Image (tube, rainbow, N blue to C red; front, side, top):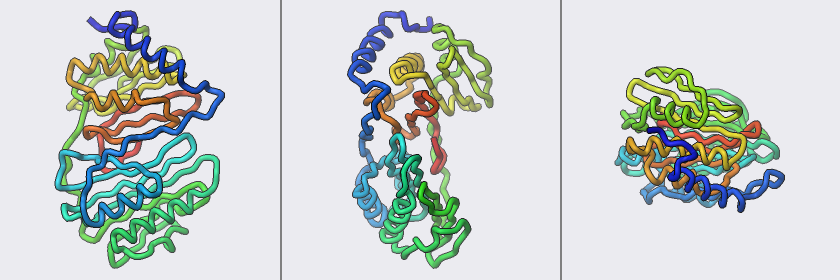
Length: 301
């Protein structure tokens, strides 16, 4: 039988969330920054040098494919209500940097261009690539002795985006990470709480709505690829997240670390990688959004 928010087990969760919500800042105040745990393991060579340089700039790191060793694919980022700084990179078993996506976006203040230049400079120093900052002022593809540099968005006061690939580097086949629950389980959980759901067939999307609250999923032939939950407040979104993931827990997902990450506080925005899944929390248009998704190399929330 599907659980509802009126069931005793879920009511305990809802009561706990009420207590947490009562201690959280009200909507008239700027939310406190979210401290994402740094879970990246110590590595070697250029990859470790870049990791330490990024940490010194306030970024926190996590590993995208923990089961793909000895390949290292790492994300180091800092994300809040107005800043999104991201450095994703891949390295060979000896720690040699092979590929990177460096992305900086500021919403309401200048300085993003300088941050992007500093991160590109850190990559160049760690990877013995040389100084690449002179390439950031214009979009385009540039060939260097190290490899290819693609300036996707040129450096500006609000941001920029750069991709780097070492010569002869090719991405290996990476293991899939996906949720083992089903669209039917999400539909049952949502419908029991008054949502109207449509879709959910393999290869399509599931959409469940109740007023401004929304639960959606992308469904592949091998199961769920993405779950996204949004609501008008953090407390409402957390309640939905607990309920939907509670249904999926019967199928073995999500792992406890995933639930713990979402439950850690009331962030203005955050991103991390846990158990091979990308977790995101953000706010836009007055909504709090939780998202858990399968990974593609350097995928975006």
